[in-house]
Amino acid sequence: MVVTVLFGGRLADYILTKNVLTVTTVRKLFNTVGFMGEAIFLFVCAMVDDQVLAIACLICSAGMSGFSLSGFNVNTLDIAPRYAGILMGFANGLANLSGMVAPTLIEHFTKTH
Image 1 (tube, rainbow, N blue to C red):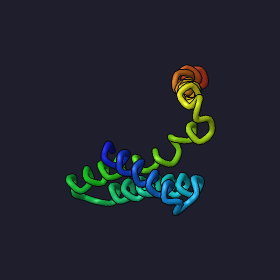
Image 2 (image 1 turned 135 degrees about the horizontal axis):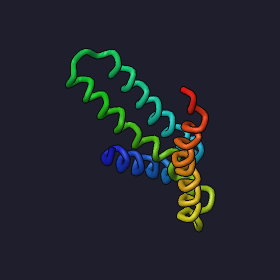
Image 3 (image 1 turned 30 degrees about the horizontal axis):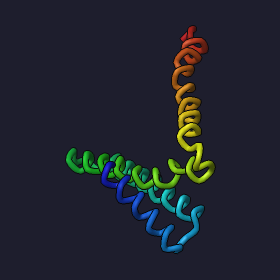
Image 4 (image 1 turned 180 degrees about the horizontal axis):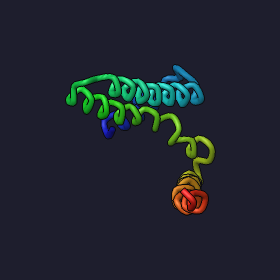
C-alpha cells in the first residue's frame, strides 16, 4: 500500500499540474480505480483455490486502496487548505466515535439473544 499511495499521489498531482483533468474528475477517477480495484481483487480472491494466489489477491486489494486515498483523503485540503489538519482531526474523531459507541449499542439491543 505504501507504494501505491506514493505512486497514486504523484500521478494525481501530475495530472492536476498538467491540467489534463479537473480536480473533481481526478478525485472521482482515483476513488473509482481504487475501490473497484479492491473489489475485483477481493472477488477473485474468493474464487481461487490456490493459497498463494489468494494471498497475492489480498495484497493487491490492499494496495489498490492506495489509489483511493488520492481521491477522498485529500478532500480537506480541497475544502479548507488552511484548516485541513483541524478538519481532518475533527472528521476522524467523529468517525471513530461510531466505533466506540457501536459495541455498547449492540450489547444493549441484543441482550436477549
